[in-house]
Amino acid sequence: MERIIDIKVCGSRVIKDGDSAGNQGEANVTKLRITFDEEWSEYTKKVTFFDAYGANPTVISLNLNNREDISDSSIYLVPIPPECLTEQGKISFVVEGEIDNKIARGFTDSLKVGHVPSTNGAINSVNPTASDLAQYQAQLEAKFDWFLIESQEAAKQAHDSALNAAEYASNAVQAKSEAQNAASTAGEFAADSENSRIEAEKAKTDSQKYASESKTYAERAEEAAKRAENAGGGGGTGEPGKSPYIGDNGNWFEYNGTQYVDTGVKAQGEDGKPGFPTIKYYSGDILWAEPGLYPNEEVRCVNPVYSVIIDSFVRSEDTTLSESWSITFTCKNAPDGYPPSVSVPENVEWAVADPVFTEGYTYYLSFIPFGEKILGIWVAKELSAE
View 1 (cartoon, rainbow, N blue to C red):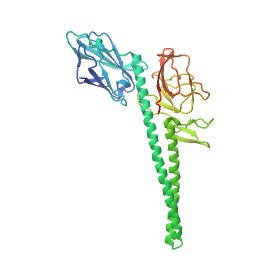
View 2 (cartoon, one colour):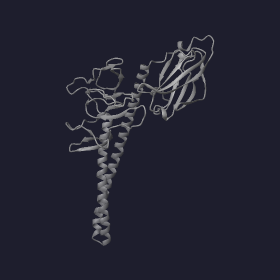
View 3 (cartoon, rainbow, N blue to C red):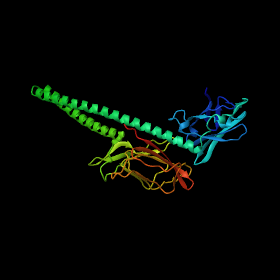
View 4 (cartoon, rainbow, N blue to C red):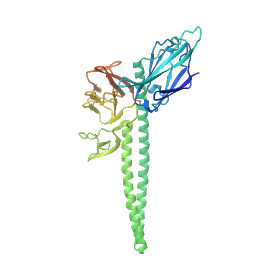
């Protein structure tokens, strides 16, 4: 049966509701539920466990995979690793917060391990704790899955909005017809008396109002239908030579054949959410990141692309901040039939293997500083047949 030890972290003060890590030889039984206050929100966090002899340090990075709720960055479930449960006594653990690979704050505490005779040791019965690189790869895959779920939900909401707008447009057309009938009737009564004339003027005013509302509903329906089509993956790339741009209000502006119009789509994601980059959207089938990708920004391509060119990785002027760059896109073949191509700077070193870019696959690329090099990690998933 799984055990939970609740630990609340308020600045550098720690409150826990238990001190038993379990017995020798146990594994995957006891977890720490660590809740951080707002003072820890800006830090990258990790927990290092030591056995009863103060040896065998085991590091667990706190990321999306450890969150109790993936949308809440303050509560993490951390399993006590088997490497520190091989001996009886007191084990210790250290929680550290880092900024720009520098430890900014931390605390240490201890737990008890009970004696069990004739045990072969927890480390012999379970897989060892994953390495830092494996934990980071798992975090990227979890974030990628979360992004796909968000995208599917956004497409569904856009589709529902289009259906509602179409219904409003239908009601507006009916209202316009009724208003025209009312105006006609008012015209017949106008000849009878002053009263009829007043009623006719009122009917005329109502008719103009309904006609104006009808036009507004029809325009909204058409706009919502276009957005639903784009959200479903079938959106166009705009008129040649008329690239979208970001207006003063932070929205994307697109050319509709005669002029640029506000799409209502924000070009930048919501700020202030710790642990997540700013999100920027780009449309078109060629992405040329010039002068390069900006730090702590995630670029998402709205349309499938056949060419991605990254000139460089722009470095932050604030040396106290951690830096990362990421981009998400779906590949398609070029108009001449050639497969998609992706160009990155020469100082990029891929962590596992060089990626192969194929039509019909969605790719998530993430880059972090690695000495004088840039370390690249990639995840790919094939689009469903639907």
